[in-house]
Length: 107
Image (cartoon, rainbow, N blue to C red):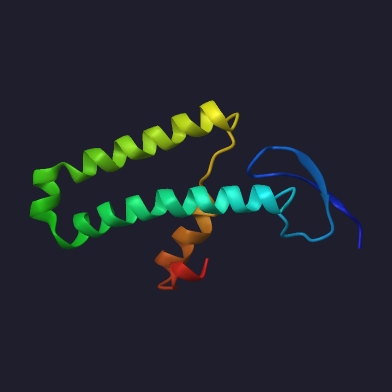
């Protein structure tokens, strides 16, 4: 199987991948990416649940504005600390799973 050259989603370094699905140069980058994504996702999840199921409280607390400010802060952090290597992962796959009635958690 020929090796392909890839770029790490965390640090941007080039690497040779034996697997077509490899996305990171090593375990440390994979863990850092996953941990940051998990922490960011937990905060956003709470806001989204409030927006979806407790709209009056969400309106009063400004949940939508907070969600937008969080996204902007995450982008600024990526630009500043990670040389612009964006954290969004498989956005199109997530959207496709939701549109198709699939389970986005499986992504």
